[in-house]
Length: 485
Image (cartoon, rainbow, N blue to C red; front, side, top):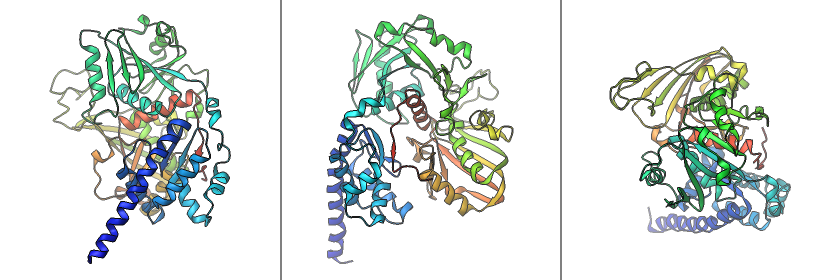
């Protein structure tokens, strides 16, 4: 290859780097001033590096057949900023692709046609609702990830305000240790921001968010109004109570209005999988469940398959990362097999996910069985869906359909799609979708299908919980381009 050719490639790369660098302050201003969340085919752009932005542009070739031109996306962002939009989610990748296909040369006219309902509405941002106080009851794996996500979103004017965390303990050094656990995470990496400890007032100041820590051994000891908290959504991530009687303890606290459980609920408690049955939430529902991580991972894919092919019956096998309720080394455990070392064994155990599907997707009631194997990794799990269908298909047709669902269906934030021979579990740490279909593993023979669905059982699930909190708080910004399914 000639030196001139080498120079051309490198000069082109430097030019695209320069343009991507220029995009970052525009993305930031849209986010922080106008509460506009930008993405490229579902991949968030806020707080991303130059290289990550260029990789997201490169990803578009898997969908459209060619890489997204960074010049097009920069022009779109620059024009959008000048039009002063109100709060919304904008997939600039999809819009830029539509702009290119339209043959238009007038980006402003194109955006006015696509987004006219929100352009010039930045002064109406307060119409999105009033700030909503949120309390985390418990600060374990899910609690700390919920804190990270809500703090991240607060930078863009999100109306969810993390006001307090309730924990047991209170001994010397407790707050510093909890700050350290938020700051450093062996799975998800360091926290992206600053954390200050206010020992005297028992609070953490995280990226400017003042978070009160309340030490109590039960909800009965807590009065949130003493800390200026009103009508709070209390997110119980302890798993101590899963029925209405137990969770009602939170509602008895002054300053609390609703309780959300981050585990499957028992009895008549609504189990909500965002993207599937979140519209079932009524203002009168004071206690709801966000179901389980596995239920959230499989229900969107099951719904997609059932909508197109019809599911007669199926079996769900979950290969699940070990969890904190297992023993690190062999010791007594009330559950079968879970007493054996989680770090050394594959542990066959039960899962209620298959039965729980019916709570979010009633048309599949009684059609699924399930089991689980806990394996020696700390995060990212897989569900294997073995399905008998009413209509025949092929692996290619199934993958094409699920790829479309991940990009354009109403479940695009729940279903992700990967088509690579080389991906492994660690590649999905931090994925914000409920589940990720592995196309290379798809097996279809006539009316029988086997689908492999990865999921970050910690972070992906926490994103689903935050979406429920936004739904309850009526924080529903429009998406562009509009759903064309």
